[in-house]
Image (cartoon, rainbow, N blue to C red; front, side, top):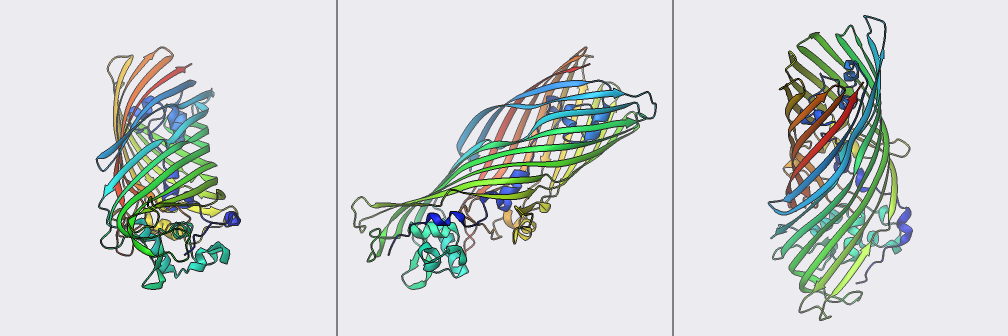
Length: 528
C-alpha cells in the first residue's frame, strides 16, 4: 500500500464549487426580514401600504404614496444563538447598519398625476453570520461508507484515484474519494479488491461532531421611481444592485472504535488490522458575487379604508466567484498498529477558484391592508418564492449538466405569510406588532432523508430550513418632521444540517438545529 500525494497539477481541473450545489445556491438566494424599524415591527407586511423606505425593496409602488421628502437610517443589534439537538448552544452578537435611504418628491401641477417620486436606498437583505456545532453518539454509519459506496457505484478503480496515473476526473472520482483513499478512510476490500470499503462496518462504534462558522452578507442598493394616479392608483419600479460575500469554515469528524486500519503508513506490505480511527474533514469556502434585479409594483386604493398591492421581483442575475479547499486528517492507533503511539496522515486539495453565474428565484407578492380611520392599520402579505427556478450556469451562460434536474428534484417553492398591525395611541405615539411564517423549501424526500442527494467536489454537507418564523413588536414616535422607531424581532428557524447524503443502506448523520435570533433596531428619520 502506498499513500497517494495529490499533485498540484490538478489545480487546473474544473470542478463544481461548493456554492454551486443546489443547497448552497438556495441559501445564497434567501432574504431576511430586514429594513426600517417600522417595517420590521409589522413583520414586513407593507406591500399594500407604502410610505416607508423599506418598500423600495419590497413593493416599489409604495414610493408613490409619499407626499414629502424622507431621509432615514436604521441600526440594529443582533443577538443570535444556535443549538443542535438540544445541546451545544452557541451565541453570537453582531452590530449592523440595517438600512438607509432617501425619497425625493416632485410635485406636479396635475390632478391626474399629483406627484412623481424617486428614491435611493441601501438595505441588508441577508446576514450569514452564524456559528453552530453538534455531537452525535452511536452513529448508524460513517462518512467513509458513503465515500466507498459512491466509488463502488461509479466503478472507480485505484488508478482513477492516483494522479500519477492521469487525471482522476477522467474516471468518475471526486475529490472526497481521492482524499479518503489517500488518508486510508476508504480502502480496498481485502475479500474483493475490485471494491472499496469504509471504516463503519458492523460492530464498529462511532461518534461524530461538526462545527461550522459562517460569515457574510447580501446587501442591496436600490434606485426607485414611482407616482400616483388621482390618489387612487400608485405605481413604482426599482433597479436593485446586489453585493454578496459568504464565507464558511466547516469541520466534520468521527471517532471510530473496533474498525480495520492499516498497521503502518506508506508501507507496501502493510495489512489491515483491528484498531481505532479519528478522522476529520475541514472545508473552507469564500463566495463573492455582484448582481442586479428589477422590481415592479402597484397599489390600488378603491376606498380610503382598503389598499390592495401586488409586486413582482425578477431573479437576481449574479456573477460569482468561489475560492475553496478541503483538508483531510486521520489518526490511526491500536494494539496491533506497529507504531506504539499510532500515526497521522493528512492530505488536502489545492486552493482553487471557480467563476460561474447564479440566477436566484423570482418572487411574487400579493398584499391587502385595512386603514381604520387615523387610529390603526391591519395588513397582510403573501409571498411566493419560485425556488425551483434557481439556475446555475458556467461563466459563458451555459447551464451545468444535471443542475436543473437536481434543483427541481430537491427544492420546493417557499410560501411566506406576513401579518402586521399598528395602533396610534396618541397623535405622537404608535405601537406595532407582527408575525410571519415561511414554509419548508425542500422536497419531502430531502426533508425525510429518503432521497439520495448528489454532491460534488470535496464537500458533502448540506443544510436546509424546515420553517422560519418571526414574532415582532415595536414602538414609534413622531414629532413635527422627526420620527424615531424601535423594533424587536425574534426569528425562530428550524434547520437540518446533514454531514453527508444517505449511504447504500439509507443511513446518514444529521442534526436538527434550532436558531433563536433576537434583533433590536432603531430608526431615525426626517420628513421635510
